[in-house]
Image (cartoon, rainbow, N blue to C red):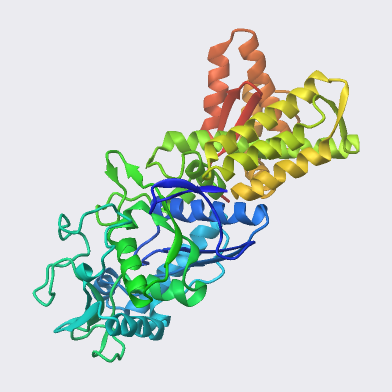
Length: 495
């Protein structure tokens, strides 16, 4: 597999530290508010990477943390009159629920800052002993200028750097660029004992301590959003390699692009967020996931409800295709009349090759759509050669699992349950348009009859009648979409 390494600015071959194994760390959320779609994109991208690595045979150790103590958490907890850890625990639980809806597999380990204090103190002690940090009047600071390779990851010159977000201008520092490893507690703040006084960790030291604790030095992949390149990941490299001179901290760095709302980055601080929970009220989790995978992970994603609508249509196609192939397996005993003998093998090769080239999800999804079209065409045209349709189903389901879109069966069941809940409304519409159904017909049969009636109106040039039927269905939450492979429908709302 080839991945784009932020440190070397090249797409390189992934060569693991230990053959056959991948050790991967991804910076997690700071849980002081509900997760937004930007957080979801990061989680989905690295979940895809993990799934693909498992798919091609690697044993993956995946660690992702929670920054459950932070200035924003403390401030919000004080405003609400609750303990900081109670606030962060609440949002961690919510985040776990949201990610489950997006079919994100739980990491192998999810360490928290509040549970890693001893490891953090040990790491700071090492950095101090090696001469890269100093104790000041309000904590412990890292001496940026003493670390000769500072700026490699972000490509910044140390003399050109200025104080930015989370880089406080502070008279207690020897240099404005120095960053906190340990902050002495202010009155009333949550704190822990340390050799330098009661306090809490700085933002950057936590990820170094937790990743080294569970994965060891020189682990394979460190990931996160591109907004973490500087200062967070730059500082992680400096403090980790200062603690263990001569030892590489991470082999490869990966960064996913930001989600933008219009011309601005989506951010809690800017107040322009679209939360995962808000979207889940309108769309199935796997539709949101597919939307996040349609754009290359390195590129920024401009949030668009139209884009989610297109993802909804594409996911419907996948769900319907899986049902279509399953029915073929049942009816044909595994064989159908079709085209090329190696269609399954060719699809698997194209799909795997796309993801092996720096997680090219656009190419991988194109291979999926082409495969679906090819199989349907083989069935409808009835070519002479035989194709093992059981193989086609396995190949398709394997691809869906890698993409994390493998819950189509549950989606179809939920969809039909929602159709059934609208049975009375459908019977009323059927009576109004003259569709051929009786009072005992199942809701799905009534909907099919209405769709047939609408198609008949369109064929007869009665477009006003067809449009009226579409609008009546839209009024009860059923949206019709005319495509090259027939009419599909989407059901809005959840049970």
